[in-house]
Length: 257
Image 1 (cartoon, rainbow, N blue to C red):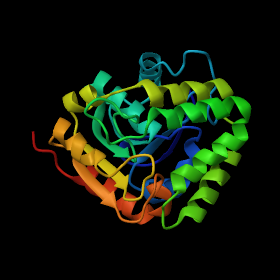
Image 2 (image 1 turned 180 degrees about the horizontal axis):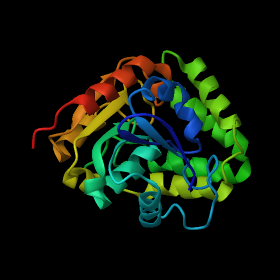
Image 3 (image 1 turned 135 degrees about the horizontal axis):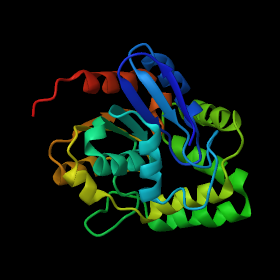
């Protein structure tokens, strides 16, 4: 698994979302690199990371990440990357100092006592369309992520530009990543997690309803939450300064055990 390391200071691991690669963090990296040593992960079959069947099995993926990442670090996970970060923090609690879940949720599809999510049919439709036309499906997903955001058009362009910088994600990796989004329910892990957690969500996120944060706090009352006005599913692009502030403020706080 490829990890780009840059910056100086305490270690900070960043995990991107479905279909993207670590270049998606470019603008935020410029803001954070003076204060943190950034470990920018390319998930399996994305960016510069090679693909092998089974690499997106969460148990395998978390173990492979553990072999590549620092002994302890702060974590920022966006969307699918947030789900993976949560799984990592639960498996290796001593290795995650603090976790920011950026436009991420412990369960992306509706389930019992979890209405604050998308219907599974939406993701299944993406999986079906992926078989027909991968590039068109990726573009549709970029549009969905930016829909509703005050800077929607600019966000779509930024995401498209980052997607085009490296080779297209491996088809099987995309299918496997979608399967994680559809099938994984980490609400128990969120309730049990030891490290401090902060959720940063866009007010206009079309993939994650605002009330998810209320449901999440019922699972774990210690979670901090921030709702960014006017932001969609990629707030670190449309609301860069606000995201940087939320991350810096959270990591700078002294934890009281």
